[in-house]
Image (cartoon, rainbow, N blue to C red; front, side, top):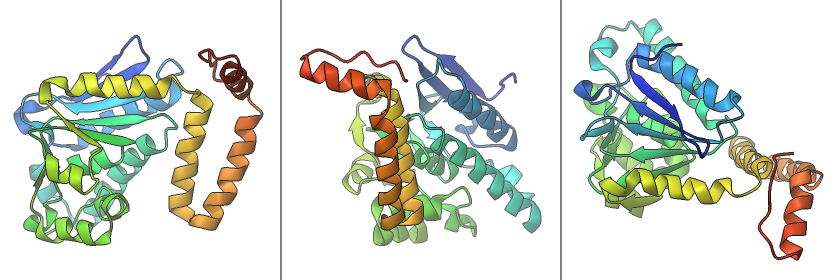
Length: 261
């Protein structure tokens, strides 16, 4: 589908750079934008040439500053529930695509913006970024996964502190509590993300997907089920050509040439 609200570029490295492109609205998430994200995340999952994704926001101020409040204010209870379910499904599509994704948080990541960032594999923030879930200040609660992913990332107490007060926190505090993985200068943010993904993508691609699946499975089903999934996934990985190549390369003291088979 043609995109009006996002920019989508696949780099030679196999990294898809997805930029939310509504800077005049601080990249707020409209219904039309969510539909474009659904299409883009489908491409990330389905196109073999795409090995990973970076998500960021256009302009100087925001990653994504939240939902489009004009749209939100007009929703009936039934429509609001459908609105939340749609966003949750789209973000889950990214989270379970089997490929690593990075949120390059280059400014405000509030409400739905933080929820989008939390659906990524990791989050790297610029030093000017501010992150938060301010929905209670509007008399609503997060609807795109904030009440579920935030406690999983920072623990129940920290999550409730952010969710109940609704105040944003600076990037340094977000790093301190584990909400973001690193804080870098804004001018260096995308290069930092690319460098991290470069290290990740040098590893076995099948193993990367299985690691993502195993972590997701364990968080969803608990330790015992997670361990069973891990053992099965380990068995699958041990039967791949990548495993044979990786172990052989280690013994021969050379760099592995993985093929994803």
